[in-house]
Image: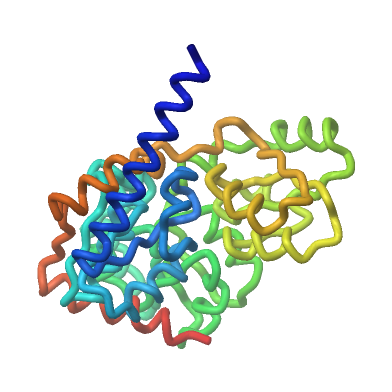
Length: 312
């Protein structure tokens, strides 16, 4: 019975992929998928990547339609950087709790209290927050961005854990907002120690969105892309992974001869996993839901994103 169900599922997926190829051609569409998406989404994407790479791809594409398989703020960033494109997402319920932890009024108040500070905002934030920002960053370039700005004081929003990591690599004074990623923040020292005891030969690679005491245990600390690259190039054959479990797709693809253990079974972002292949096909059929950013917000937010893309 189970084998029959798997066979039906595989046949359904084949039909969906065929329909997707047809729709992509008809719409002149490009599919961008974050590394935290389900395997079935990453398999059909034109580009897989972290927030930074996908922002670059959105800004540069000559496609008419961008299908962004990620969470809502990522679709907004694509629309801001490519205002003349149609940007759609498979499920508009794919939000980001961390992005919701910072609000415009609170940020404006902080700016008033620190008028000489440069506002650096993690890309995991709403368009409205980006519009209040001097420059954005991703986990891949956060240290570079903070060290690139003028002045010696930085307002950092919204991720306190990434902010703490950046603080260790800059001389600037950082005023850090108290937000966090629900998924990464869930990983504890106890989780990691138990995994290290279970797999003593494995290296621990960890994302800086995790708690500072967890990050300190890392053999390597970096963005999702940096972790994937490190694991591919490392001589080690076994890894404990401290980031969202969707990363496993690219890790296994790049390093089929290596073994990956995720540091906790809870390293799953429910918002990222809202999207699936069926919803992806449906959104291209209906061209809904579309991402809309008011022009007055988009114009201000675009500056902060473009400044980020210029940092080398």
